[in-house]
Amino acid sequence: MTAKTDAPSLLLIVSGPAGSGKTTLCQRMIETYQPGLQRVVTATTRPPRKGEVDGQDYYFLDSENFEKKVQGGKFFEHAHVHIYRYGVLKSEIHGKLDQNIDLIAAIDVQGAATIRRAAKSDPLLMGRVATIFISPQNLEQIRNRLERRGQDDADEIERRLRVAQKEIREGEKFDHHFQSSGREEDFAALRAIYQTEKAKRTK
Image 1: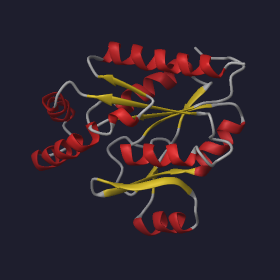
Image 2: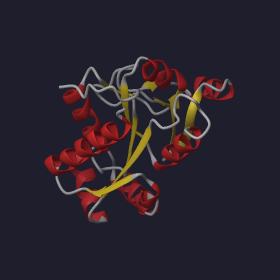
Image 3: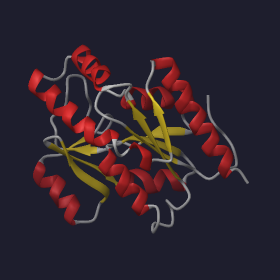
Image 4: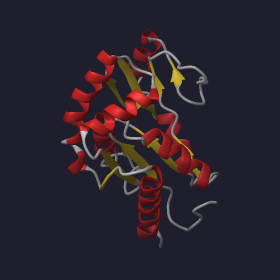
């Protein structure tokens, strides 16, 4: 299924605390709307998790190479998230938007703020960025999801919960903001936002 219109290509930025389901939602959107909607592959210094593929899930860079790209101005945004660095490469966005391909990216709130600022001065991003924040019903919902995911130890979960408290306060700065309730409900909400944003830009 594609969202084919005469609207200019769009960059959807999806943010939310760890455990909000943003990465899974983005993947489901891509599966539904490809090839017209594609994922922005971000770069990171964290090691790959089991099954992750370099260049497909992330660009896995060591700290030295990441910093070289920072100094070379290769990133739209980059930030420390937890104990690793993440960033959105300009090459991942410019080329596809220019081909009228819509993009979607799961990015932390720091990165979303940077992209919003970039959209005010970058000609290709102007008028093409829509930001979405997914908030939890409460912190216990995040805790339960992180524990079920089984990727973090107890100390890491507690640290992520502290970060989540700060991130939730940033939700009102986004273009769209909805509370997570369930997989189908969240997916329906994100689809509706995508369709609304495309309709707004249709000539």
